[in-house]
Image (tube, rainbow, N blue to C red):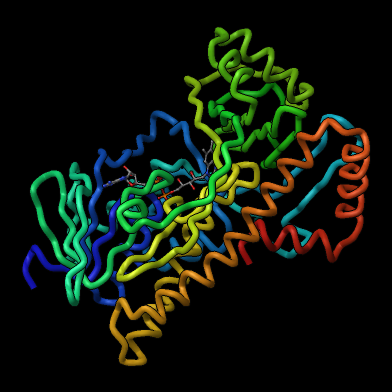
Amino acid sequence: MNDQQADIIIIGAGMVGSAAALSLARQGYKITLVEASEIPQWSEDVYGLRVSAISAASERLLIDIGAWQKIAERRVSPYQSMHVWDASGTASLDFNAADSGQACLGYIVENNLINTCLLEQINGMPNVKLINGARLSGMTWLDDCVEVKLDSGNEIRATLIIAADGGNSQVRAHCGISSSRHDYQQTGIVTRVRTSLPHEHTAWQRFLPTGPLAFLPLADGSCSIVWSADKEFAEQLLAFDDEVFSQHLAEAFEHRLGDVELLSSRAGFPLILANADSYSTERVVLLGDAAHTVHPLAGQGVNLGFQDVIDLTSILFEAVQNGRDLADPLYLRKYSRRRRADAGMMLAGMDGIQRVFTSQHKSVQKSRNLAMDLINHLPGLKQFFVNRALGN
Ligand SMILES: Cc1cc2nc3c(=O)[nH]c(=O)nc-3n(C[C@H](O)[C@H](O)[C@H](O)COP(=O)(O)OP(=O)(O)OC[C@H]3O[C@@H](n4cnc5c(N)ncnc54)[C@H](O)[C@@H]3O)c2cc1C
């Protein structure tokens, strides 16, 4: 094989594409990983603005591919509890790791730290070639492979192409796979704050009529904020000066953690629900946000993407064990069916919660308070939600 030939080409070296490269490289495949932008680098002095709540299942994947050790020795924030409450009612929900015999429910980790540690691992893998600063510009299906053209002029052929190029996937577009899409008309505002009361290693979430507001505990005692708000309101929030924004934030959070002091800039992300009609086609599979985009209210987006990596790795292993080609349609369809079913459940669940909690109807408000009380007092039902959060 030469540089123009690989077993697998992965388009997109975000968290999901890079994890897929490492997981599949461990099976000995020759992999070319293509990334259009500069890969975000972590720095100890500056907290990354974007963080993820990493589940136990994702942690296991990151351990397997050798990245978790590097992440954990730099900066992670384990959280032991979750407290969720409704702005228009009295009900609340509490989840504790100790109730299910776990040390924590998950970890809050900066996205750029995950990217950095995945990249360090990739640099140590002789069978992964990273092409950085090049964008996919074309795909041609040949008899026994696909030829990928990059805007840098490179032409590479591979048996299998993995689309990990995010919500606006060009690979998905080239393959003609459509995606059902719903724009929540909301913006997720992220920033970092110091609170006058301790965060108690708890992930806090208050459901407001305009969307959920989360305070996620960070290792230095500060909190990462994800405030999902209707677009117009979000524009106002982003335009306020730091002091006015902090006052609005503390009020929207009922001063539950006291006064709030802004520690970073703010950024807004459009909130979209999307699910591709299929996660595979001839010699191509979709992973991560290229396949599905979920509302961030339960912090499950990248966890779903990591589960795609776990399932794809085991299905390709099975295909090869059974003497089949890496891109055998039977196995690619198996991947698509399995992951669409799992992601579909999560997408529908998160969408349902989002709709129920933003409803202004009195009857819906009453029912959701009853439902929260019920979940909080029925151990079996509560355990189900804890298991979903842990990724079990
Ligand atoms: C406000 C907010 C908060 C969130 N919080 C959480 C959370 O707590 N927990 C959680 O699990 N998830 C969370 N998510 C979701 C999570 O961030 C995404 O699911 C995750 O980043 C998707 O990763 P990905 O690698 O699939 O895609 P991306 O991160 O979008 O990566 C795609 C990569 O492909 C590259 N690319 C794109 N096009 C091309 C091309 N043509 N050629 C080459 N390269 C290309 C891009 O440059 C990029 O690096 C949140 C999302 C938002 C908006």
